[in-house]
Amino acid sequence: MLDTARLLYRGAPESAQPNFNPSYRYLKTVIDGRTIFMVLGYVDRRAEGPVEVWYSSSGEVIKLLNGHLAGTTGLSIDWRTVRFSSLPSWQADSGTSAAQEQRYRRERDLMPGYRFGIRDEVVRAPIAPPTDSALSGTAASSLQWYEERSVSLPANSSLPNARFAVSLLSGTPQVVYSEQCISNDLCMSFERWTPPAPAAGSPASAGT
Image: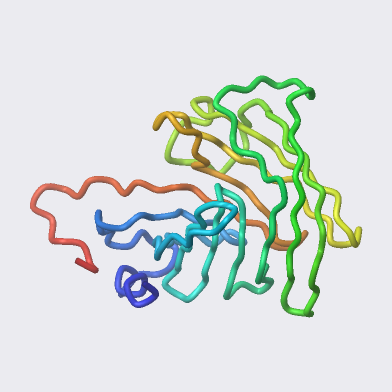
């Protein structure tokens, strides 16, 4: 899959859109202001749920479990392993009251520095659609939004709040956009990306 991602990007800068192949699924990812389009390599079936494994052309790997970061490789800071406890599912209906808060626990291993077993107590609450997101493929008002805030142990490992946008178009809640931080200095956004239809008479996409 890494070779496929490189082929899709051949001859184009990372900030440019590759020659999309409709046979693949894509994730528009912004890391430190750099936009890349990642390719879904495979889905890892785990006890907690299916984990999507996404690849960039330059070797970064992002793992997402129900929209949540479940591991990374190739970044300046990596979450090598992430473990969840009582991770709640996304709700089909929501308001904005504090009574609808949900809680779960997360444990993560951080590299470099060999920092293992960092524990986060996470609180999720519905919020109004924001006006300052990097979402570009759909209207923010058409999605249900949530914010997650965490308290970490050790305290100096605490993270900025995360935001998630959930679509109900398929009948099952699905995270289509999120903003998540690995550290106070490394934040990312992820958006499920549907490539535009190729113009009539255009050549086949790379990677076919």
